[in-house]
Amino acid sequence: MIELKGVTKRFDKVLAVDGLSFTVPDGIIFGLLGPNGAGKTTTIRMIMDIIKPDEGEILINGTGASRDLYRKVGYLPEERGLYQKVRLGEMLSYFAALKGIPKREIKRRVNYWLERFELDNYIGRKVEELSKGNQQKVQFIISIIHDPDILILDEPFSGLDPLNQVLLKDIIKERVDLGKTIVLSTHQMEQVERLCDEICLINKGKSVLKGNLSDIKNEYGFDLLTVEYEGMEERPEVLQTLGSVSVEITGRKIRGRLKKGRKIKDALEELNRLGVIKYFRVEEPSLEQIFIDVVKGRV
Image: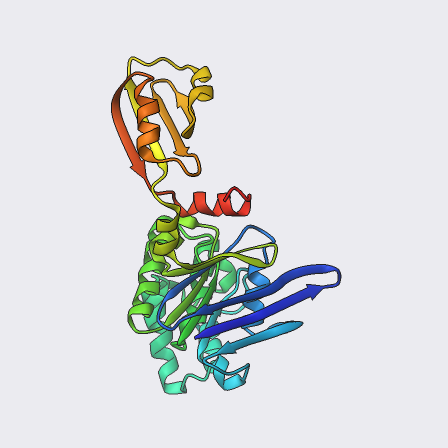
């Protein structure tokens, strides 16, 4: 379990993280989200004890930083830190040894992960000869090769094609099934929706939304509407007549959302007066829309 209690970090006059508190329970995928400059990477670096907080406390499994503790943590940074002139197999063996893997076990693990990511043919190649996507896979292998209990991933899908994104997601899910804990920071909201159990959204260094992802989406309700009419022409002036829903009109289709405090039946009564409805759909907002609304202060 990871706990942040009132954590603050300043860089000169810049307040990067401002009294941040959240808890990551064991055995879940936890999304740490926020716009550029929100303080996500600074928070991760403090969790990893790369930099120290100015105020507050960070606990992993109830204790502070120690060398033994961080042998149980894997970290994939957003920026790459690979030795470009070293051959791939040698570099992975080196990092495996640094992470305390017994010598007799290193070769087996290196070979397993290279085969898993279809990189075994590159074992004798220098890292600089690998594509951006393959280097990202290598960075992930380094973070996981010691079988950590906690895996912290900062933009893990960067540079990966769709097939390798699926492979990475499968491996992340496998780790959770084994009881591991994953902290995932990414701008790809669709990945968060498919993977995460809980999230914390930070903006300007502060937590603005956190909790169980399903509960958060339920709280926002089913307020997105799509309506298609028979024979309706595009009429922008209609936008001024609707009291229940904010909409955009494209040809015969209206798409919008309920205004605060209004009910679906109110919107349906108004929309019914505009013409014969051919199609009507209500859906929950995406995490991306919730993210945008919260950051922009719409909710």
